[in-house]
Length: 115
Length: 113
Image (cartoon, rainbow over all chains, first blue to last red; front, side, top):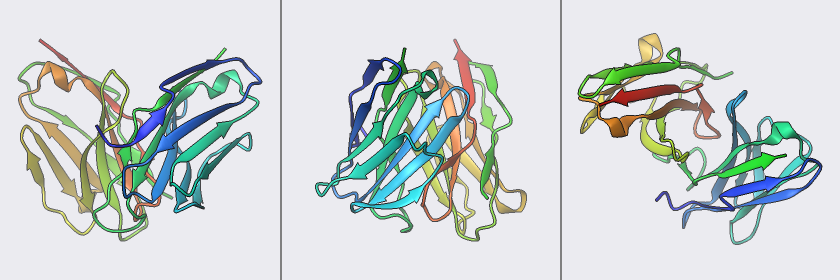
């Protein structure tokens, strides 16, 4: 158990809909990362938050947004869903980005299926 | 830009064979971190090892060992005496000071009894 909790584990929704994925980081971790794993794109970094502030952005679509709340949990919002958004979405957390001897611990992922 | 190449898409071995998974990376950063993760059929990403760019010592953990060579930009992973439970997809990843992870495309390892 990595200590990172993601809910829900599975989500099936229709095209055009909006969903919210939730992530609770490990106790003490201030930084949260979101990744998308799809068959054609592999594992890709989406966005990073550190202590409530956006820290880095990857290949995140404009239809997607995220935030980190004061209790440090994070939500990834996906809207106007398309079939191609079907993927496994991972959240990871670490203590402080850039510090030595930190590693990212991943949650179990949310499998999103858009039909 | 950072890039990680795992040229082996799939490897099949028989139990008890040794197997090496290759990882070649590209980065212009002088300080960076290299990782290996295991993704079993259940889907989660399991952290295996992190290596700092300034520490080229090889590491052994049970049946697992890692060979880091800066001169060839490689960070290879060897499983000794493979077991069926080692069947998974293995990802090599690179991070410049842990801002984000850049993953390779993964190597699927199939260990048959």
